[in-house]
Image (cartoon, rainbow, N blue to C red; front, top):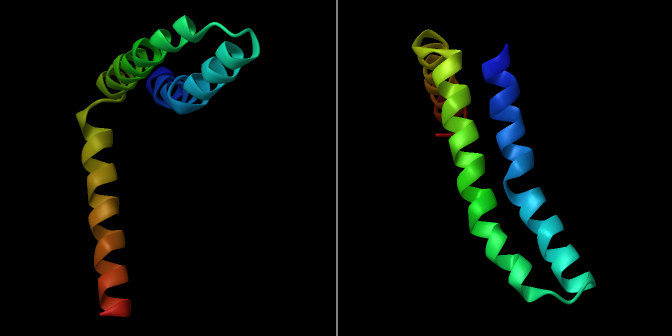
Length: 79
């Protein structure tokens, strides 16, 4: 469960936090704050990888199998 929360949190830390940081930098007229964008993006990847490690390989295999099934069904339907 913690792994899934970390994966979800990584999406919140990623682009929305960078957009908020950009808006704050523009609002207070401090462009140096934009240097924190790449740091936040890197942090989101670290949190994402940590979540994947906690979720485990069995869950990743199940997700991959579901993805392959979805692609197969879509290909059979539309091709």
